[in-house]
Each structure stands twice: as C-alpha cells, then as structure tokens.
Image (cartoon, rainbow, N blue to C red):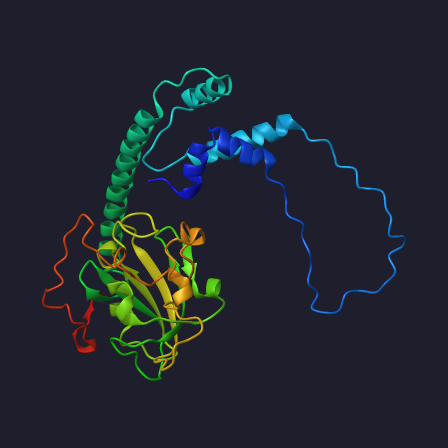
Amino acid sequence: MFTKNQKIALAAVTTALASAALFALPQATTVDTGTKQSTIPTGPTTSTPAVEAPVDMKKVSEAFGHFIGRHLKSPGANFDLDSVIRGLREGSEGKPAPMTDKEYEQMMTQVQKSAFEKVSQENLKAANDYIRDNSKASGIVVVKPEKLQYKIVKEGNGPVVETNGSPQINYTGKFIDGTVFGSSEDSGGPVTIPLGQTIQGFSLGIAGMKEGETRRLYVHPDLGYGTTGHLPPNSLLIFDIEVIKAASPEKSEQSYLDDEDLDEDDPSDDDGLGPLALVGDDKNTDTSHSHNDYDDNDDDDDYDDDDKDQDD
C-alpha cells in the first residue's frame, strides 16, 4: 500500500517530477496584522536588489535523493536500493529502461496489491490480539465481543445521546501505537456528528453517553473502516470522545456533513482525513471487506445500556 507521497516518490524518477522540483519557486509571504498598513517611513523607495546566495547543487541533489529514498519505504514492499539508484543513473543518461512503461505499470500494480494484502493481514492480527487482551483490562465495557469496547474516563450527568442523534463532541482518533489520525481540534473545535451516517463502531459506542461524559472507544476494523477509506487497512481505531451536547437540533457550521466537505475529488483529502474523519459513505462504511466476517444480525446487535457485558 502506497501513500500519496510514496507514489510521488516513485514518479520522481520521471522528467516531470524532476522539472517540478527544479523549477518550483517559493511563494512570497505576506503578514496580515489586522490593522491599517504601517505609515512608518522606510527610507528611499529605490533599493539594491538582494543578492541571492549561490545554490549548492550537490546538497540540493542529495536532498532530492533523500526525499525519494524516505518515501520509497512502504510497509509490505521492499525496493532494492542499488537497483533504484542504477535506474536513476541510467534513466538520467538516456539509457533504455529494463521494461516498457506498460510492463512497469502492470508489475507495480502487483507490488501494490501484494503490499496492501500483507499490511491488511498484519493489521488485522494486531487488531484481534489487542481487542482480545484489552477486554481483560479494568473498567472495560464490552459492547460487542471482540469488536467494540469502551471505558468511561469521566462520568457525565446530562441528557443522553440518542441512537440516531447528532451530538456535538470533541474527539481524538488514534491507532494502536498512539499515532493521532484525526481530531476535532483539527476542525477548529467541537463538531456535530450525525450518528446514522458514521462508522458503526463509532455510532454504537457513543450512543448512551451523557453530556459531560468522556469515553474511550476501541473499534475493531470490522466495525470501522475495514480495508477501505483513507486509513491503513484493517486498523483498530481508538477514540477519546467528550460529549458537549447530547443533541444538536440545528446543523452546525462544523458539521461533518457540510456539503463543501464532501468533495471526494479534493486532493487535500487524499491522505489526511480532515473533516471526513468519522463520516462514512458508500466506500468506508462497508465493513464487509475485512478478513473476518461479522454477522450484524447476532443477538447483541441492538445496543442496550442494560445489556452491557462487563469483563473484570
């Protein structure tokens, strides 16, 4: 599985990227102080143009190679560095490529597929092991065995979040290793989440929370994004959630369903989750792609506060 940066790095050996790296110029920066422009005298209007420091092409070349190298590292894919360097050298010298562009595309597709499957299987095993062990931890409440758990971090005493409500929350989403992949802070503050249009593990885990409550959710990929969406395939997700308001009758300006946030063609959303971190659509609410089949029709499918399983 390759990220956008890794794909850019692969394409970096082409003339197009080399040209882009060579001719991309920094943008001028202006500072808006929020006040009228300063009237302090600055001296004569004529000035001697600043002398640019000479460019050390050796260092720039090394930095360019470093950029390519660090983004060639991809889970599940092992490129032969010596061969990559030889390809760069021979390509820059105009020598014939070891295969046609079509052959390269076909083989790279196989490499990507193999890497994706390898990472997917590894992540699924890690998710299964983690949620199984976590069920034995103190204070863990099991909503769905080996699929969804939570722990109350702070009690609340306000109104309760309804099953299909639209609560206003603060949240932080993390992977098992603690890496943060999204938060309400990224959106500028509390956000409104329509529970009927988000991943199943999140909607089931937040239903029943009270205003003022803080809860930590542990979501297995079968109830998360599975192998779809922006995240690494079959990732177990950990959410820290604080309910600000149990119900938001009006659509918030920071609602995750704002139309301007639903542009799948927006390149800014390719790698980062941004405002779509929790909202599902046809491609990321379908959890049937993970390697473990999950029967949504089992006896504990409908979450009920009275039916919570407590593992000590």
